[in-house]
Image 1 (spheres, rainbow over the protein chains, first blue to last red):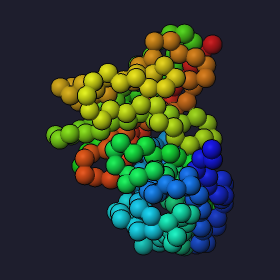
Image 2: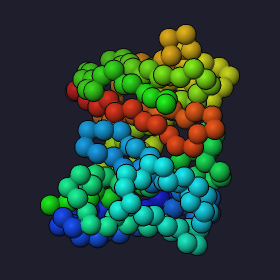
Image 3: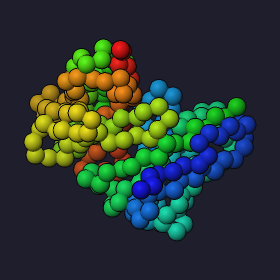
Length: 116
Length: 113
């Protein structure tokens, strides 16, 4: 079956531009996660949704980062006024249930954002 | 806060040789431990996880890991590697009651023919 998909796969933005990154989770999955992976680092948690509710946004690095999942399926991560330090791969993951340790997270291929 | 340390950033190994990728975690409470693999231009894929019970966990593609509470380690092993195992491997921890997975920095495994 279809896995987690993300679009675009690559995005180049000029400093100061706004960007929107899309995540299509596995159909029916309750939980959705966003991670940021800087070059040479492991993924770092950004935010977590259970259905349409954003239950944890403690990892968002600044108020320029905003995520939504209005209908409990597709999610969008928006970055306003992009800065060079925002350059990274943004990973989306979904899981079938509440996102606990026994609930496997399935990852998309990521969106590589480059801010010039 | 919980954290994960992967002791080797790169591990080169010859094909059909055994390999061990090391992972240590810091925690004073129960943890749940994971190994993920990331192939080039692909998302992370779960290899195996330790939740409870037997400390020796078997995963996909012939990998296994052993949870050692006294040494706070969760090393990943494979007795004989293939070229196709070349990838980035991430250890991660999930502490009870805390939603996010916390990942290590990764170990790049390069299998040499």
